[in-house]
Length: 302
Image (tube, rainbow, N blue to C red; front, side, top):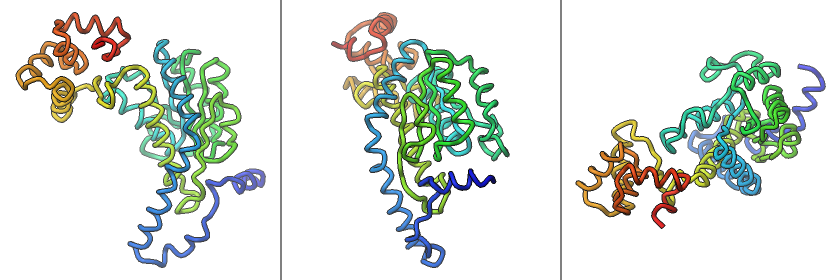
């Protein structure tokens, strides 16, 4: 490691040591758990000052979806895995196409489960990976990096800007390098980790909270929910089929047989089944009405 890099890392909050935890290997497991839990409670408070930036980014993502663009998460190691996790949850939760939210990790598929040596330092790979996606100016790239200085992520943000895509950074150091070059900076300063430098801990928790908010808020803006109900859920297993039934019945108050019939006629589409039961339209007509209303169930019902 070069002297300059050592000096740079020494300035990062995510690399700092919390002296109050110097004895955690000497205390009982229960006491260590209490201290770790206390440290974790600080994470949501650290997210709060970033809410305006998070909301701005979510609105840009919703605009991108409306224009046929994508949300592309980019990260190395834990941040990359968190991006892939959030992307993979969108289709079953919101009924989206798998290509609408994409996770890209330095080192490719093997890096999801195994550390790939040198991958986070490969700037050229970031450019190649975004090129392989056919990144356009309709897309939003969210670069995730605890330090905010990961070369792979910085290169992805720069490439996004070169292609006129919206760029967002999610980091855990104030004034991060990534934030300084992104269109929207989300710097969640969580402080030193419970285990110094182990950014899978508080930093990882903060990143997970932010990514949850970005997709959930963007999907709210794209009418993927009715209130807090996931009315675009896809019933891909027995649990989700039961949830679909409960959602329709909860919103409509219809009898079991009527809910079953509406879901059957609507090919399992919760939003369509609700519209059928509350408007009296056929499933085909309800679907057409939803399409004309940009997918807004509230607009159809009003």
